[in-house]
Amino acid sequence: MVSLLFPAMTSETPPPVPRAAPTGADVDLSSRVALVTGGGSGIGKACVVALAAAGATVHVVDRDAEAAEAVAAETGGEAHVVDLADPAAIDTLPTDADILVNNAGLQHVAPLTEFPPERFALIQQVMVTAPFLLMRRGLPHMYARGWGRLINVSSVHGLRASAYKAAYVAAKHALEGLSKVAAVEGAPHGVTSNCINPGYVRTPLVENQIRDQAAAHGISPQDVLTDVLLTRPPIKRLLEAEEVAAAALWLCADHSGYITGASLPLDGGWGAT
Ligand code: NAD
Image (tube, rainbow, N blue to C red):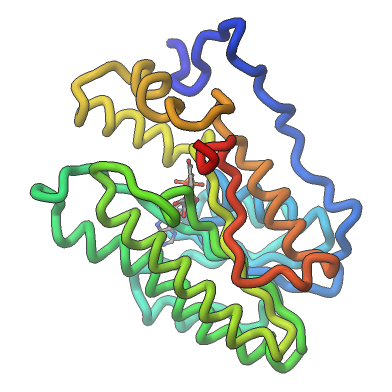
């Protein structure tokens, strides 16, 4: 079967970028502890690999036990099997992280008039309330050390809207606001807070979206890729999770200490159109 995410190449389709993980060679995080939510898959997994390669000890947080344990074993980190929709479970997580990557997320695609309220609430809980609770618990440690990095994996949809994504777009816009407040409050303590705003990344989340969008629009999965997802970015390819991880690693370096309250688009030029 042909993969949904490898469209036929044309003369106008740029080749996929090399998928090598960032080595972390120019960023030394050997004295740092990181916590990555959704670290078992996709962008979160790539962030764990990149941070560990730079020397950090990484807490891999995911509700998927098998995935979290596999990534932790691969990177010398520690797995924490937690459902981030459950505030009591968040209270069991360690509070010693110098770097917090708020990454876990989920999508639901439906018109506003049919959007299930319980899915809307769940998405806010996992993608807004959990990052807030993790910041609230983790910031005292960062303030005590006089150094910290909050990396909030937002989206192009933290800056603009698409149809059928009411909960996701609302949650990502809320995360943008939360990140900015953390930047303002964290500044006197050496803590920066930034969002990364990817376009469409080649991960399981996007595979699922292609399936759902195909159903919503009544078109084939291949047409979703070419006629829906990649119509707006001038660069006609999916982003790789390793490219997002490279940006997260770059924000963790000391040379990025003056960058805070920012939103870094990795959108193939989408925002320029
Ligand atoms: P993914 O589905 O590959 O991975 C998400 C991970 O989060 C999974 O391991 C899942 O088990 C975990 N997770 C989900 N809900 C959880 C919960 N309640 N508790 C604990 N863990 C939970 O997704 P991805 O594409 O890597 O997305 C990661 C982040 O990047 C999300 O916040 C997403 O919104 C954002 N993002 C993705 C894209 C994209 O195109 N893939 C684009 C922009 C932003």
